[in-house]
Amino acid sequence: MLDPLAIRRDFPIYDAEPGLVYLDSAATALKPKAVIDAMNEYYLEYSANAGRGLYPLAEGATTALDMARERIARFVHAGEKETVVFAANATHAINLVALGLEASIKPGHNIVVTELEHHSNYLPWKELSRRRDAIFRSVKFTADGTIDTAHLETSIDETTTIVVFSAVSNVFGIINPVADLVRIIRKKNPEALILVDACQAAGHINIDIERWGADFVVFSGHKLFGPTGIGILAGKKESLERLTPMNVGGGTVLDACGPTTVYKKLPENLEGGTPNIAGAIGLAEAIEYIEALGLESVRAHETMLIRYALEGLKGAFGQRIHILGTDDPNQRAGIISFTLDGLHPHDLAHLLGEENICVRAGEHCASPLHRTAGFPATTRLSLSVYNTKDDIDRLIRTMEKISRIFA
Amino acid sequence: MTLYQDQILDHYRNPRNFGSLEKPTHVAEVKNPTCGDSLHMDIAVQNGTIADVRFSGSGCAISQASASLLIEYVKGKTVKTALSLGPQDILELLGVPLSPGRVKCGLLSLETLKKSLTDK
Image (tube, rainbow over all chains, first blue to last red; front, side, top):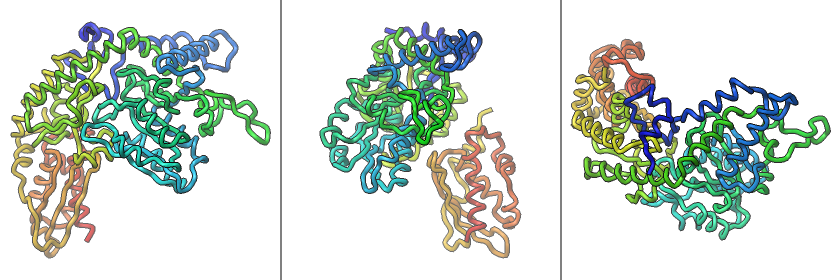
């Protein structure tokens, strides 16, 4: 088992905020010192641009960026490191795909999303559909909080061009069976391209691009202990090669002068401009950190805490609490969202915040989900390796106190 | 200092002028889609004065208490006075500073009031 109190010593924020109860890792995870140090090392000791200069410092930066890409590729089981594209964040990565496929979307064809999606995996497709006169379809979710596979099947036909879904909903926190869903989609339409939003999966469950079989997988760096400002687009080489470079400029081109611009191969053709070098180095270090803990141990720790939190919340609030999604902790990736009768999520989150207990309240950038579920807003707690049973106890005790104020 | 002073909790639990008017001259409804707060106001204006006003809605304590406090304040005052109110006046009515994240909740009442008095 992981020792979260020992792990906290790796996270300097706990020195700055000794009483912190951080339960918002699904928004962004805290940063281990090793990640900060690796980025500082780049800025302090070899902060040259990558891929351009011929002097030793620049070669150092180029090598570090290259090694980071390789490290990330191994983590997500990408076949070749060239299939790992650096983006500014996951939203940017999704937009690279949506814009890169724009020309291939035919009017009257359809794009399939799900009602579980974060706005970042919803709006790029909604807007793309609108621009191309394509049909925008949204697949329902079940009461358990997973994608409704029967509705997914009937939503896909021979004119479906793209299907996108999240590996884990950022509100329900329930793990979708990605490989099975990909098989279902392929069976209905082998030509449709599939994008998986793995933001809430990364660092919690194994991202296995080969096994999943999707064309594109995206995730952000900052949710798995990495820095902000870096996201990853990965996937099948032949699918990534179908993307028209939309963020063109420095670093993307072989021949900029001729009548037809000749672009570089993957991944450079999709990475216009100086990449977030420190960010990539930091993300690779974050992956190093997770793998040293062991993804299975991380998962076991989170599942134990989720079980503890589910039992504690239901024990304390009984019929007053409404937890979204299945009760089975094994199906969750560190997230619980709920509503509490008589207490608005904003009031609850604000008052918890006054006790330095950090949870998220609102619609979590998932308004289609909230509209369908029938809640204007929910309160979300999300866990990571530095959380303890004591965090959950403090959360519940403080919630009880707040509840009494409002009673 | 906690945002949730007795005055705010009191107005949240026992909102003043809650309900609707049979013959309002001015009506508005405003929603804050990101958190689901909503306010509806019915106003009866007579000779440039807010003769009567009622509100209904749902949402967090800050949005609902601020509506109750604001309505209590503008009732009997002129439309001109009501339209001249600014965010600072709402903060003074609430009696506590709002953090940036909660300003929207606190000002939903003012937005609804102004919308009803300017729309017909």
